[in-house]
Length: 333
Ligand code: KG4
Image (cartoon, rainbow, N blue to C red; front, side, top):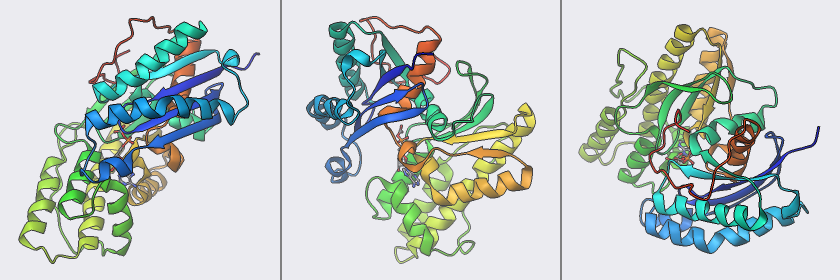
């Protein structure tokens, strides 16, 4: 069978990333231009600045993604781009660029749901992974338990009622003076902390939903009342408290669905302490657990190319009317 090469374009937030992936599973190139150092001084992503930087970066990133593989545009089967969810201005840069490529090269255009991309990052890392499985989606803007029934069927069976988990990490990090992006900084600092010596509130809801605003506010209030508190202790106990809730809900979800395979996805799935807690859970409850490799946890073009491949073989094609949808859900096309 002929190999299928998909170009994936990702610009939903602060990474301009273009990748070429073979048959949905093998990365031939994955070039990312990150804007972290630009947004760091503002303590978070500034949407207008993000859009402008995508415009400046996208042509060079695309050129490099082709150069490192020695692949010509002619050999690409389709152009896939993130069209939501994300920042509207940032998304529009990738969508417009992909449309221009599709039109000028006469190649099919495929709009890809960014969240499906995060799930597909696991397909690249684990060649054996196939649906059905449960996905614990933990990104900067989303926290959901997704029942991945097939490559094309997604059901949200649990979700956050307030903050996304990455948002809680970033806000706590900002208040305790660690800067942006907070997740990796809390992860590192937590290595020096003592588990168990700070008790934080846990929110357990009756169903599979989450709420992170209580713990976020508790950490922030505690820090304001005790500015000399050991930040490493705060970090490890914040992570452990959050992990307990994640694991408890995933455990319930495996029992409810009778699905024994769990994949983590999204930027927060890079967290070493959360991964450890999921490993312990998997061993105890005989669950098979998958994580994307670290460089595929955060936003990248490869995951969009992989998700684009499955859309391509399923016959999805978009026209030049494709638009950015900032609040697209994983179960929407
Ligand atoms: O998935 P992602 O790159 O962007 C979205 O699609 O939202 O996720 C970004 C989030 C940020 O909140 C960042 O702080 C968090 O992922 N993050 C981490 C770690 N690495 C990135 N959070 C906890 N521990 C980490 N090691």
